Image 1 (cartoon, rainbow, N blue to C red):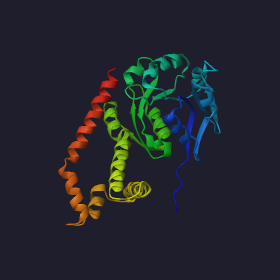
Image 2 (cartoon, rainbow, N blue to C red):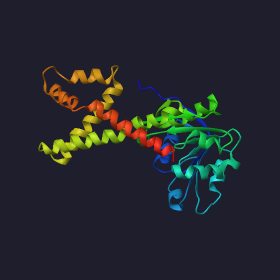
Image 3 (cartoon, one colour):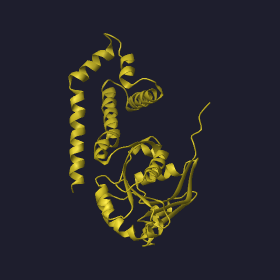
Length: 280
C-alpha cells in the first residue's frame, strides 16, 4: 500500500518575491498535507503578478499599489523567504529589518549573497538555501546552510519548508557554492545531454517527435529506475552493459573522450564563477 507522507505544519511565512523559484516553493506550500498557521504573505512588484497568486491562506501584495507590502508581509512572520535577485537582497533586508519579529528566520535563495552579508543587516537568524529548478515539479534538491545565529529549531523550520518541494541537504556554508555546481547547475547538464542525444537520434533518421519520445522517455525511465533501485548507478550501468556488446563499445568511446575530466573541469569553472559573483 502507498505510504501517506507525514503532515507538515509550518508557522506564518512571508515570501518576498515570487519569481520562478519563489513560485515553485509556494506551490509546495499549498500541497495537501501542508498547513501554514497564519498563512503565506507574498509580495511582488506588479499588480498583474500579485493578482495571479492565489490559494487558500495566501495573501498577495503588489508593491506598486502597496509600497509598505514587504513590511506588512514580514510582520508576524516566523519564516521570511527572500526570493528577489541577488543584487536586490541587501536593500530589501535593510527595508524589512525594523519590522522583523525577534524570532524570525530569514532564508535567502539568492546565489552569492553570503551569511556574513545578511547578518550584517539582519539582527536575528539568517540561512542560505540553494534550491534547483526541479523544485517546480516537487523533485528539487535544496542545500541549506545555517547562519552563526541560527538555532537547531530555525534550521528544522527551513528543512521542513524546502522539504515540500523535494530533498534537502544541510551543508556548511563553504559547500553551498560547490553544491550549486552539482544540483543547481546539474539540470542544465542533463538537458544538454538530452539535447545532444536527441540530435544524434535525428541524425540516425528518426523524426524529432520520435527522437523526443525515445530520449526523454529513456532519461526519465533511467532516473526513476535509479530512484526505485537498491543499487547505485554504477551497478545499473553494468547491468545494461553486456560484455562485448554495443553499449560496452559506446561507453568505451565516452570514457576515451575523457568524460570524467570534462565534468571535473565544467564544475570547476562553475565554482570559480560562483566565487567571482560572491566576491562582487
